[in-house]
Structures are given as structure tokens and as C-alpha cells.
Amino acid sequence: MSMTLFVNVNLGGSGGGTRREPIKVTPMMKLSDAVDGMLAKIGRQAPQGYEITLKRKPVDATLPVRFSGLQNRDTLDLELKSEAASTSQRAAPQRREKPTTTAATATRRPPPQQEQAMTRPAPPGPSPSDLPADRDLIVFHEDLLASGQSLGSRSEDLGDDFYDFTAQDFARIQKKRQELARQEESRTLQTRAMRERERRQRAKEMPPVRVRVVLPDRWCLQCIFKATETVSGVYSYVASLVDCPSFVLFTTPPKCVLDRTSGDTLYDAGLVPAVKLHFGFKGTPSGGQIWKQGVVDKFSVHSPDQVEGHGRRAKVGVSVATAKDQEAVPVKTQAASAEDKGKAKKAGVPKWLKLGK
Image (cartoon, rainbow, N blue to C red; front, side, top):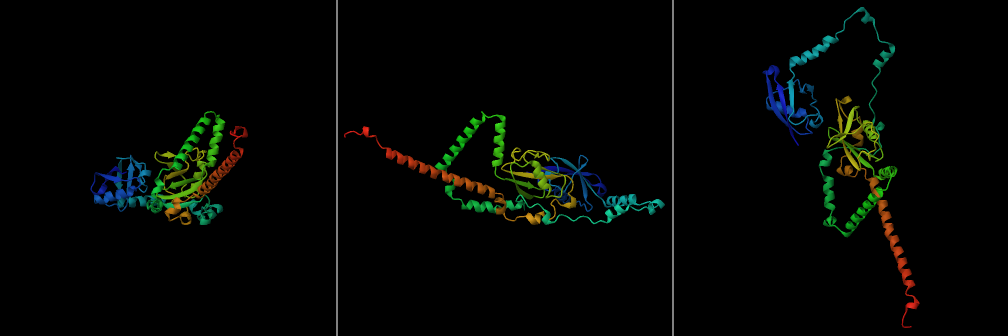
């Protein structure tokens, strides 16, 4: 879904005046790409860069449009930087930073501890061995899912009989409806403590929750959490993988920001059985990149099948155990029915009811 923005280009010394130009952008398009295309269209160049403001507030043009807080038909102000302005900006700090040599400052030296701290080398970044290796973490790009290779190969294996509605399907649906009706009837006679205990039990029986976090550059991290773990635990784990101290996680649509200090479980927050979160931040990450060193190299995957099958090992184990229990029940029922039939045959008709003898 595209939207239209209007840009007031301040021509400055290159002709004077202001020129209003419309640009069309998409939510994941960088604002700088749209502005560069607009400048090329009107025959203007910005070798020294430009500044974009919205209602006198600066706008980061390197972010996608959906994360820059812009709305449809907003009017932006663009000012081209000139060579003279950039030269004066570079020269101004030099004039301010020029030291005044006096006898006091010439003989003053920093304390020994401060001098050692100044000469001490910076600590190295985290090595790949220091990164968290639990929670079955994988890292991939969203374009990997757009290929659709895994979905196409799976749909080809299904025959036409897969879509037929059989008697077993009808019996399963009826059984599920009866269970829901019984649960609803029993819930009306429960106390608050009983309902809370039942809710906690359902949260414990939930399968592992797949949490996918989408970053602004469309790289994703996907990991496994229990339904009884808290939202703050998700924040702590994501913070151990990114080099961005101030960030938020939110769901959309509609946009709902998760509280970093919340003690609610994933089950209470409605983030089960799987959730897709978006990563937002303000400013620029330290080091110029969001990921910590070695995360992408160690945990990245390159196959859609690895992404689709991620985190389903526990689910498969549960379904196999359940299937074994379900298979054992009919066998026991058949044996019990055979015994009942044998007893019925042995009992027969009483002697006093036999006629003709």
C-alpha cells in the first residue's frame, strides 16, 4: 500500500525560492531512496547531502517509511547543503576547540589513573562462542520465505482425497464440540481459584511458542519460548543478540507495543501458539549495525524448509505419544467387548424358559 508525501525543496543559492514536489513511497521503502529519485527527476544534485524536517523536527531518511512516523500526505521540508555551509560547519568546531596556551595549562597533566585509562585499549567485541546458543535460534532474511519453495513442494504431495470430508472428520468435530460444551458447563460452577488453576494448567500444556522478530532491514530472528515464560524474558534474550540498548517490540496490526517490564506470560499476553514481533528503535545503533558480531554467521539458515520445520520437534513428540495412547484405547475396548460377548454366549437362555421339553 503506497502513500503520497509532499516535499518543499529549498533551492537556496542555486536559484532561490521553494519548489513543492510529490513523491510516492511504500511502507518498507527508505525515505532517502524516494528523495534521491525526486531530486534526479527535477535535475538537482546534493553532493553535500540534505536535511529533511517535518514541522521543524528532523527526520531520519535512512529508516523505512513505516518506522519514521510519517503519514499519508505529510509535507516535508528539504534543504540542500552547500559547499560553503559545510565548510563553515567544519571550520566552526576547529575555532571553538583551539586551545588557549597558558602557563597553568601547559604544565597541567592528567592524574596517573586517568592517563592509564586513556591509553588502555578498548575491550574487544563478543566472540561467536560467547553468544547465547539455547532456544534453537535461527536467523534468516524475509526474502527466503518469499521464494515459496517449501510450500510448493508440500502442496504437490497432497492428493485429491486429502480434501474429502470423511466420517472420521465428522466424528472428530462432534467430539470436539461435546468437549467444549462440557467445559463451558463445568466452568459456570467453578470458583475464581479453580479457573486460575485451570488456566495455568492449560499454559503448561501448550506446545513451544515460536517467536519471530522482524528487524527494519527485513532480517529475522526466530527462537523458542515456553508459554509460561514472561514478555520481559523475550526482551532480555533479544537484547543479548542486538547491539541496540533502547528498542521496543510490537505487534501489528494494530500496533501494540509490549511492555519491557511486564511480568505477564506469553499465554496471558495472547502470544501463543506463535507470534511475529517487529523491532523498532530510535537513533543509530552503536557500531553502525544492529546485530552483534558473529550472530548472523553462526545462526543463519538458507533453506525455507529449515524455517518451516523450526521448533516442531517437541510438537511431533507430543503428537506421537498421543497417537500411541489413542491406538491403545481401541485395542482395549475390542478386548473388553469380546469378553462381554463370550459371557453373553455362556449365559444363554435359562432352562425354565425352554419349551417343548
